Image 1 (cartoon, chains in turn orange, green):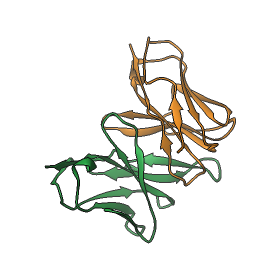
Image 2 (cartoon, helix red, strand yellow):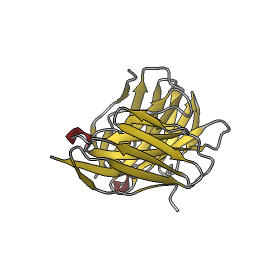
Image 3 (tube, helix red, strand yellow):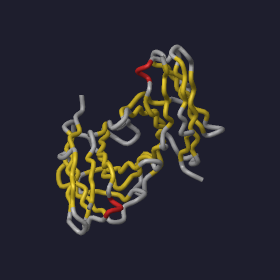
Image 4 (tube, helix red, strand yellow):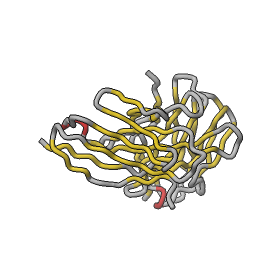
Length: 112
Length: 114
């Protein structure tokens, strides 16, 4: 089974801090994704990557950046955390486009 | 219009009942469709892909209607353990040629009652 591991289950950060969320997959998947999930809004795509060092904006990229230096690792960066970035962050990977995703167990981030 | 729309529910059904959910999508360029299941405070998990000809996996049947741009999920003989939120997923072309991104519906909540 594919495993997608997110580095932290819960995080509490202060407004203005730079925050790094890490995601690692162990099955050589090409595509990796970052979503946030909020009540009533569902999962919204922040960024995705279809190859090492390649990235593409999703629907809500503002306030975020990403890094994919190695195929197995996809990092989400909150440049200056704000309270409206309090959310559940979910990382996913897929073998190729048009394949189903495997999700990590999520990071619940609270910005105070 | 939202790219993917689902009835949020909840659908409260007795054990053993048959229940169906629909999901509409707005972009005719979408090529891949999935149903995911999400339990409370857990990550979504792939339930099944949806193929043009319709497909079945045990008690679950998925169908695609391209003309009307909707997909459906039918659950027969509902079990208590089927209680969850069911997310409809549709792909859209990315900006870079050959890439796709997946758009999730907000989910339909199902409660199966004893």
